[in-house]
Amino acid sequence: MRFSTTVAAAAVAGGALAKDINVSVGKSGLKFEPAEITAAEGDNIYFKFWPKNHSVAQAAFAKPCEPLEGGLWSGFVPTTDTAKAAELTYMFTVTNASAPIWFYCTQGQHCQNGMVGVINPPYNNNNRTLQAFTEAAAQARQNVSPTSTAGEGGMLMNGTDHSTTPTSSGSATSGSPTGAASSLQVNSLAFSGVFGMLAYLVL
Image (cartoon, rainbow, N blue to C red; front, side, top):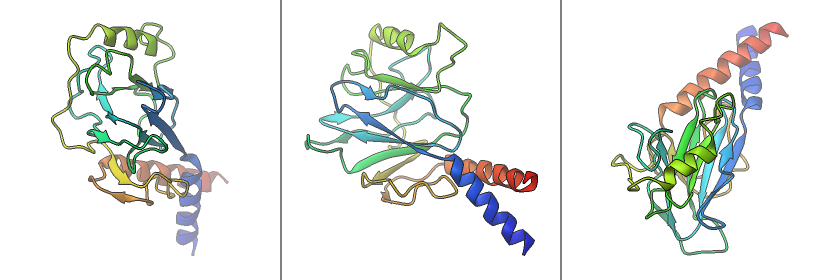
């Protein structure tokens, strides 16, 4: 009985930490909204795509508009409906809030034109800011798409309503995944479970 109670308390405490953060891709021109995001470990980031054809790829700060090996990659998500976001959404779970995630759109010259963003920028480093990343991107000679499979680092999901997610594990349940979920969801489960266990023992 005590074991089952402990597990239940861990799930509740862990689930309470996670939240959904929506990012509009190209809704109001060549930009991400918001372009600068603060997220905690276990939070789910949902990129929602607007016309005409955009993408999300992870880059290193020193190499904007170039894909980071093994980094996030949504693939291209074309849509023509200006009244709503595309049915296909790219989602991933933050597992290390201390590691900045720099990203950009790989379409045409979108990266050079300022379609870039960052999750958890290093606030103690004035040289590594979103503005600095944007200025460096403007000078990039080319805009490169990853060669990895679309959905890398997270998952592609059908459906734009994620009001019922995440579950206590931090993984998405609504919609239909079209790409394999990465180990990010597994790591989120471990984080939530451990934190929940500690909370139960303290209380």
